Length: 148
Image 1: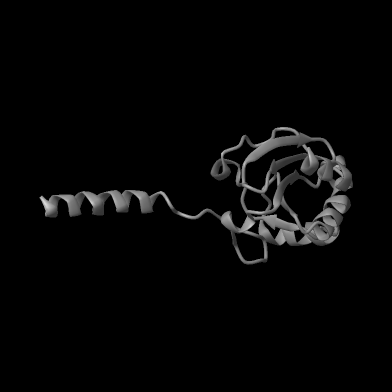
Image 2: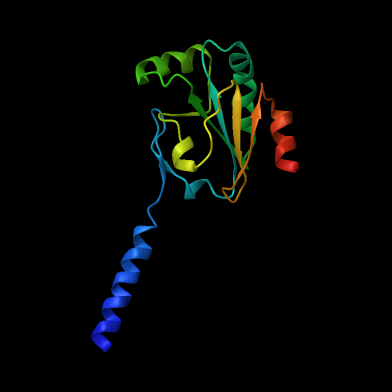
């Protein structure tokens, strides 16, 4: 009976631990980060493209917000999933200071990929999906989301 109980406990432990795989987000030219490491901060995942004029216009405000807000983080997703070398050029061309993701995290983080640009996906400090904001954002509009 004890051996059976130990086997059951071992199987249950293995099942529980298999569900504890940590999600990693791959950043462009930076070390990967874990989803858990973002807890305690608001997360704004911004979708942008070089052909989207409103996207380009909001990039300086997003860079300033990311630099100035200790309780928030902006991560960018190039909508066209351009290769790393082109992403280097775009980051420099548009003076993007926030981190860029190498891959779209929509499926992994369980939200719908935006079909309109610009779009900013919002997660609260607990890592819960809050909303997707459409249209250009400013530091003030993102701060308002954090206060609501």
